[in-house]
Image (tube, rainbow over all chains, first blue to last red; front, side, top):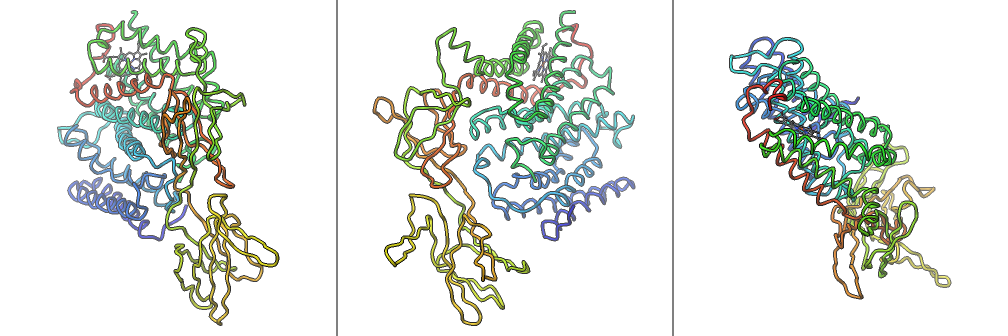
Length: 264
Length: 339
Ligand code: HEM
C-alpha cells in the first residue's frame, strides 16, 4: 500500500471522499445533498480519467490501475438503472464507486507504460470497455442479490423493482456485454497470438464467470422466482468469479499466462 | 419429462464446464491445452454440441424465437468449428477426406531468403505448398528515445530525450551533457594503429549514443552509452548513464511465392498477420542479436469460419434477446413443462 502524492492521486482521493460522503449523507436521509455529492464525485472521476488519458496518450485501459480508474465513473449507470430500468440502489453504487477506486488509489502502480505491440489493436479498447460496463452491471446485480438475501430492498419511492427482479434485469443487461467482451477478446487473441483460444488462466476464468451467468439464466428460466435465495446465490457467485478473473490471476502471479502484462 | 431431463442435463453440462475451466486455470496454459484436447474431453465437447442440438429440437421456443435460436445455434457452430479445427479433427479430416493440413508451427526466415518449412512443436518439419520470402525485417522504437542519468549515490536523477545536438543542464556540480551522435549499430574498426568508430546499420544491433560531458571546472570528455550494457559505468565516473529504447513494433516484409511468382505481399506486425492459402502468418519472434531473421508463427484456419459465425450469432442473439425484447415482469416459473 502506498499513498500517491501526485495530481492523479489527489483526484482519486477526492473522488473516493466525495462518494463516501455522498453515501453517508444519503444514509442520514438527505437524498438531495447525497445526490449532489455523488454528481460532484463523478465530475472529479471524469477529470481524473481524462487527466490520465492526456498524460499517457492512449486510451487508459491498459493495466489494472487504469481499468479501475475507469470503473470509478459509475454515475451514468445509476441514472440509467433508475430512469430506464426502475432499479434503485444508488447508495450501493456510491459504495461500489468508492471501493473500485481504492485499489487504484492505494495499491496499483500508476507508472505510465508504453503500449506493448500486442496491445496496439483496434479491438483493445472495445474489448476492455465492454467488459468494464458489464462488470458494473453485474456488481449492481450482486448488490441487489444481497438485499434479497437480507430480506429488504433499497429505499423505495414506489416505482422500483423488488430486489430479485432487479437482479434478473441487471444480469439481462450485463450478459450480452459479457458475451461480447469474451468474443472480442477471442478475436483479438487470434489476431495477436494466432489462436482464438489459448487456454490461459485469464481466458478460463472469464469463461468460468460467463458460465455462471449462463447457469443463472437457465436456472431462473426453469424455476422462475420459486427459489429466490438460490437465484441470488448465482448472482453473487458470478461477481466473486469476476473479481477473481480481474484481480487474482494478475496479482497472484501464480500462473504464468499470456495475460501477465495486464498486471498493475 | 424429457424436457425437464434435457434442461437438467444442460445445467449439469454448463456447471461441469465451469469447474473444468477453474481447474484449467490452476494448471496453466500448456497443461490446460493438453487437458481440454484429451480424448475424454473430446467426448465431453461432442456431448455438449449434441445436447444443444437436442435442446433446439425438443424446445419449440428455441426454434420459434429467433434470438434464442441464434444463441444456441451459435454455440453449436463454435463447438463444431473448434472440434473440426482441433488435432483430432485434423486427423479425422486426413483419414476421411485426405485433406492434409500443416498444424501450428514456426518458420525462421533470413532476410532475402524464402522458405516453406514449418517446424512443429515436436520438432517435426512439414512443408507448405508455397514459399514465404522475407524481404526485410525491422524493429521500430517509440520516439523520442531517452537517456537516463543517475548519481553514484542515487541522490539525483535525470531523464532526457535523445536528440542530436541537444544540450541539457544537470545542475550545480554536474555540468551539462550534449548528445552528439546516435548509433544503430556501434562498431570499432581497427586499421593498423588507427581506430575508427562507425555506425553500420543493417548488419546488427548495437545501439549507442555518444555524449559530451562538460564539467563545471571546465573539463570536457566524451562518453558512449550502450543500450546493451545497462548499468555499466566507467570506473572513474560519478554518474550512471543508461540508454533505453522501447520497441513499438516488429515488422516483417513478406512475399508469398508460388511457382516462381509473387502471389501475395504484406508487411506483417503484431496484430496484423498475413492470411494466405488457409494459413495465418504471425510476427512471433526475431533475431535479437542482429535483426537478420524473423520467426513467424504459422497456423491453419480450419474451423475458424464456423467459430466466427458462431460468435456473431451468439452476440446478435444475446443482444436481441435481452436488450431489444421487453422481458416479462417475471419469468414464467416452471414453464419448462408447458413450453
Ligand atoms: C453454453 C451453452 C448455452 C448458452 C450460452 C445458452 C444461453 C441461453 C440463454 C441466454 C437463454 C435465455 C434465458 C432467458 O431468457 O432468461 C437460454 C434459454 C434456454 N436454453 Fe440455453 N444456453 C446454452 C445451453 C443450452 C443447452 C445445452 C440447452 C439444452 C437443453 C439449452 C436450453 C435452453 C432452453 C430450453 C431455454 C429457454 C428458452 C426460453 O426462454 O423459452 N440451453 N439459453
